[in-house]
Structures are given as C-alpha cells and as structure tokens.
Image (cartoon, one colour):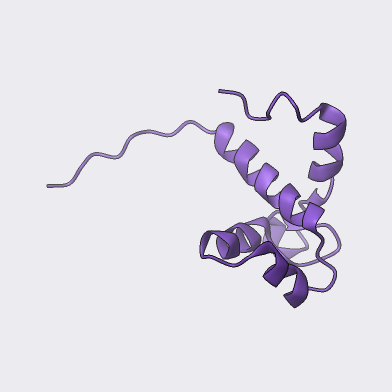
Length: 91
C-alpha cells in the first residue's frame, strides 16, 4: 500500500511536511505545526472527535488549511512507517 497517493507529487508533499517541526525545546519534542505549540496529535485528535477544519481555523488564527493537511499527511506517513503486532483477544 502506498503512503502517498500517486497524484501527490513530491513537490506537493515536501512543502506540506515542512510545516511540521520537531524540536526538543517545544512541546517536549512532539511534532508541532511550525511556529505554534499545536501538536500534530492535538489537531488529528480534534478532527477524529468531530471538529471541522473550519472550526479549528477559527479557533487558532495562525493555523491554515495547509497546516491541517500537513498534520494528516504526517500522521498517515508515521502510521505507514510502523509495524504493528496484533493484540491477542482477551476472553
């Protein structure tokens, strides 16, 4: 399974991912949207719990639609780069 759709060229992908930074001095090194303290996990979590992109944009003035896309792409690539072991079903 591909991590990046064929239609998303590297030149589209790289500028998006450059919006995400990791710095041990900011949010204990968690990936954040560049220039903010908004973590990727916070943004993805808000979306997972039903927040609309427009809601996030209105709540966080410096956040852009591309920043949200970057968070989703970063999360997708991070998950794709990991190996998961199945959990045993507890009965």
